[in-house]
Length: 441
Ligand code: S3P
Image (cartoon, rainbow, N blue to C red; front, side):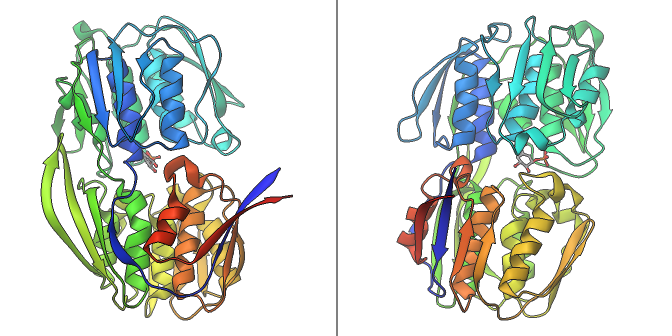
């Protein structure tokens, strides 16, 4: 076993204009919907990370011809809604909960069997949240120990469902929308209602493929057996990847960065809202709409942050950004409180506990709650932390070094490549002082 270790020297400031890699959520969906569309879908800005490439490979294994990705561009020769073929082996979705949950929905209504597997982290994440409503639709799904991958899916005929999501999860919503494509339109529409707004890339992209999806407040509805017509998808830069640099530039005195072509879908901008409420100096420039998704360039200059009570309504809108927001809180004046965020415990790691363990190493005062954390800002030191294989925790602690008094050594950083290929090179180019080593353990 080898351990990928980031060693980040304390101090520095960020100063550059740059574009972070493509949005992970939109990249997965471009492959999924492009594959079941009629015609050739072209994609630019695709995230060449391990997660989205695993999705691409899975669709190739089901007979879809997809070009190798070159500089973010690829071409998907769609096979139509009913053109997927039975894969010869289990589909390995690596570290990606999004891929596994969305594909459960897509595969539940096929006339062939399939098996979905993932890495150690993904194999410990709950899948009953998608299997249960899919079973209500008629799906035949078996989970290991009733909850986990491998997921075994047998052929089934699905009926539309009216479902109230128990959690504000775009993965469950998207899973059920994809399954609904395979329902009999004679049986009416399926509708999925969310308890609070969560990312709506599936609804937007389905519409981009010409599919009729209606949204009325929290409810998204569609009827099955329509056609998706191939289109062009411009994947914006991932706001979740940009978030590391937004916090880095905010906390490191003298910083001034411009993050280019970032997706600012209203269901994803919790990190901007929260940082602004903390006093961050963030402005959006050159706002535009690209392929149905709003995009802007984001300028961030350093500012003295202050602690806040994070509004619960912002939690689903910033769900992937909390590791780095905890670092912002550690650098803020006063106390920051997060509640209503128990979902963080079932991400790539238990993000409340793993972040708390790292904050303890740095000497940041905090108190863990079942559904959140209280963090007291102030000066902190350095030390050795582990990401527990969680990409976003590794990158969050790299940014923490900008304000540490000692180096921060971060273990288990391999999975940074799942969402942010080239992170360390980019971080160094824009002002972080970090080294990457492969250590044999
Ligand atoms: C995602 C939804 C979110 C998010 C994940 C990506 C998506 O998960 O954390 O990284 O692309 O639909 P949940 O649906 O579990 O909140």
